Length: 141
Image 1 (cartoon, rainbow, N blue to C red):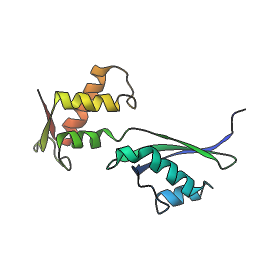
Image 2: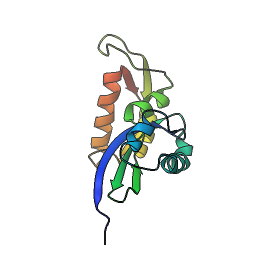
Image 3: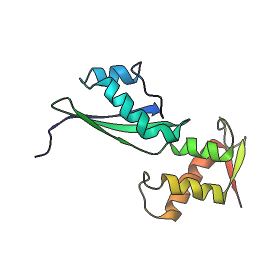
Image 4: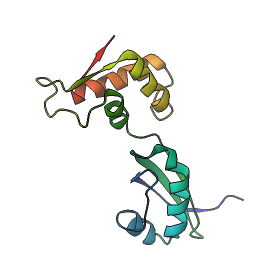
């Protein structure tokens, strides 16, 4: 028989460095979850993605046990890393801060397509191209 779910919630946690301090500790503690157990499991699962903030969906059950599902890092973070820049622009119409090749964009698509609301690579390319455009990053051949 399946466990009864008490609550589901989302958090963004730096990969491989979850610790009991805010925001992780209070978010888990108020729901009765074993904080250190979560931190150890999360850090072990995300140690290969260091440097990114990882979206995580935590499911807490009535008996205070939990499961969690990690997602891919935000598309904007993946694009910034691929473009080799620190941050996007505040005005994408006037200021272009960098460029990314279509090959690099394809690599980002490969990583991110599981979390997007499409399975079509062309649609995923359009979604990520829009993200690039809003960050002031040009896509070049």
